[in-house]
Image (cartoon, rainbow, N blue to C red; front, side):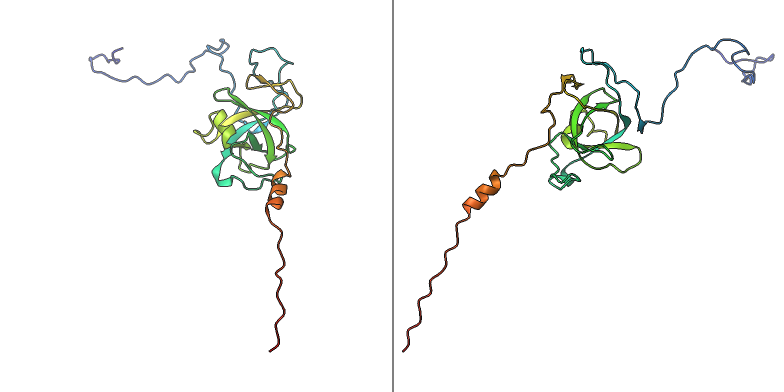
Amino acid sequence: MPPATDAEGNAKLLPLPRAIAVPPGAAARSSVPAVRYDLAVSGTGEQAPDDGVPDDGPREIFERGGASWYGIQFHQRKTASGERFDMTAMTAAHKTLPFNTRVCVRSLVNGSEVLVRINDRGPYAAGRIIDLSRAAADRIGLTGLGIKQVALTVVDRDGMRCGGLSVEAGDAAAPVASSEPQQRARASVPARRKAVVPPRRRK
């Protein structure tokens, strides 16, 4: 559209009208849904999206917020639960959930999910609700972004779904400590023999 001109034909910008675009009492031209920015809050009462597979019903979201991950710098270090951190295992850290709680972590960016087991405490940074192992972060595409908004669902019974699969009793279970390595180590150490020193002969 050509610019407005005055009576002499010179181009001139006209001031914007100060009146509101929609007259009083008129219906709104569009309805914009409200946006929630309080992501790091409890999501009790909210329902997770349906994955299209019939199961035991909708899952209740326990918490929503930021997720981060930790890897090689903490590998094989002791966690708050006492076990060694394994960055290749499907584990995570949470501030309040009991150890060995199974949690389905759903990415709010791409919709992917991963089942993890809580074995550590943290994170303590503002806005973050869970720290995932490197393997769990890779599963939902978190490692490339660093921090991602997620929704947590506590898996408290068998048959619930996570990542399109039904969760069974042994999924994400705590590792069972075995005493075989210690027994083998003890068996491989030979017993010490006492050296026999002959008595000295008198000249």
